[in-house]
Amino acid sequence: MSITVEDVKAALSQIVDPNTTKDYVSGKAVKNLKVEGGDISLDIELGYPAKSQFDAIRASVIAALRVLPGAGNVSVNVHSKVISHTVQRGLKLMPNVKNIIAVASGKGGVGKSTTAVNLALALAAEGASVGLLDADIYGPSQPMMLGVSGRPETKDGKTMEPLENYGVQVSSIGFLIDPDEPMVWRGPMVTQALQQLLEQTNWRDLDYLIVDMPPGTGDIQLTLSQKVPVTGAVIVTTPQDIALLDARKGLKMFEKVGIPILGIVENMSTHICSNCGHAEEIFGAGGGAKMCKDFNVEFLGALPLTLSIREQADSGKPTVVAEPDGQVAAIYKDIARKIAVQVAEKAKDMTSKFPSIVIKND
Image (cartoon, rainbow, N blue to C red):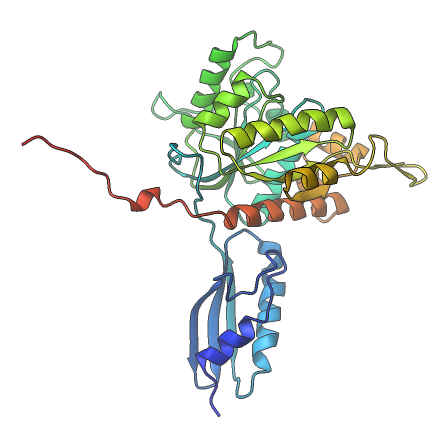
């Protein structure tokens, strides 16, 4: 009895993607399926970057197909393909940028910038093309965190090339000013500077642009949310009640302008004593999870309050590149994958499919 395409599809519909919790058939990940005699070949196309999991996914698919009666040689290729997804109504996607993810917080001091840079590095480690826009004009910190200095080059006198480190393209006002120079600018100037940084940087074919938003929910944040085509937002908070109060405001702001919340990251969740290993919930417990329940959004993960995260970011070598196989880097990578899966499940951007209608007077 020869094996059929339907037999193979039935088997694949029983294998669940560990990241999306959908089977590969209903998740539309099966491509180029061919059955010749008993030989089977197919591609598994993931809509999110997961280079570290390709081998495990390939092995699970091969194992499930090899046991089919009449199965011969089984060839499975696993790869990722990140596409553009919908943004706020009335806004067009940026050229060379498929998806923009805003990393925001209601207040400062909750570790938003540290989270943003580690998420960018985690996505890059999983095989994505990633950029990082430091949108905090008053307190740019990404040049220091990424260990990047110098002035951006310009090839045409109008636009600038992003600087790069650890495989991440980065643009920041910090590259254009003296480190000790305060930015005594009013809101409209800041907003204009931000838009120039975003639009006049020659981003090179990005799957994701992570925007490290300034803290708060004022004029700058609102203008950004209305003028920048954002695929989704990630809210960073600590378990402390006062931080959660402001995080809720940040979440509500994105909801008002039609930007989906991809989830919440709880920073400084527990403190592990470096001497005795005792765990203590300094800022309270369960605040982020409760907020997720209240607003029906995903809890992306919790990060510990450890000295190494701060030291590594300050030294220009954040945790994901300083200790790529460590426990904290694994948490960042898990959060980054969850964000990418959330983005992948959003509606595709179809604006490029529609023809331009031009009315001419004869």
